[in-house]
Amino acid sequence: AVVSTQSGHYGRGGSIDCLKCPDTAYTWGVASDSFDKCIGPLIEVCSEVDMKGACYKYFDDSLQLAMAIKSLNVLRGEFELYEGVNHAGAYISVSESDGSINVDESSTIKRVLSFKAEINNVFCSLDKGVDYRGSVRHTSRSGKACINWSNTPLAELAKPNNYCQNPDENNLAEKPFCFISETETEECDVPECIWDMDCYTGIGAQYRGHKGKSEHSKTCQNWENIDYPHPGSKYKEGYNWAGIGDHSFCRNPNDEGTGKPWCYTTSANPWYWWDYCTIPRCYRDEFYFYRF
Image 1: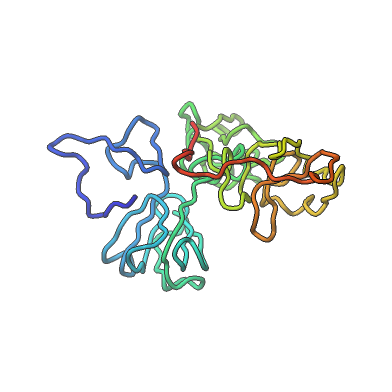
Image 2: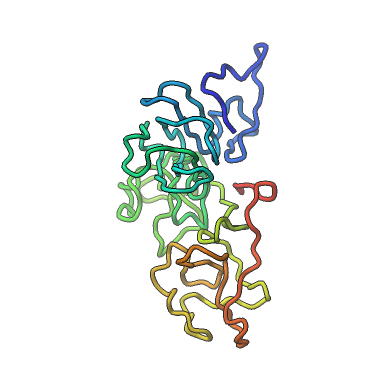
């Protein structure tokens, strides 16, 4: 969805119209009277340097931009900016903390022809939120203000801000939380991600769902015990990026960038020492982004 920055008021005839947020966004209420109040990715792009010229706001991915982009500013969240159309070619990641950027000053890319909004772990928490880095919540579920993590017992593990996190990988809470005093914690009202939990994107390298059966109904083998009954010690260490750990859920730690989620099985049948998993691909007409 795209809205010109020159669009006037959203109300008509002195009244305020309620608007449906873009698919990538949500509100904590029933509706909003402005897209800017929607919680989700937002980027502003301009035809001239220093955020001048014709400027437009995007709340979603763009596979092919209709004009040359010379400057941009990520207003909410994170975006990947690509040199080629359809999210191809060299890219850089830009977040709301980077401020406005002139494209020709980048040492990695010299043009932007498409971009992709980051949803998971930015606007929702994936797999308990161990990698959640969003800034959508700085209050607990009951509305109490979160204190800065640097003043808490988890200061060495957490990022030094007052946003909800789940920083202790060895003692994970069920959801992102925060300290409301130096000793007291409360869970945060951060939605759960659906994409890469109920379905998978790309080749499934980011899939963190809990499917533990293969497509031939074989039980998946624990990734940290993958020398028995089938050898596969290659994936014991160094594959955290693919979600490998002490569990038996389907994953895709493929270095070559192909395939889909799979697992080693506990079957003694040599035909099924590993097997793909039956997990649907993520499509917008079938899956929402958020679970509340």
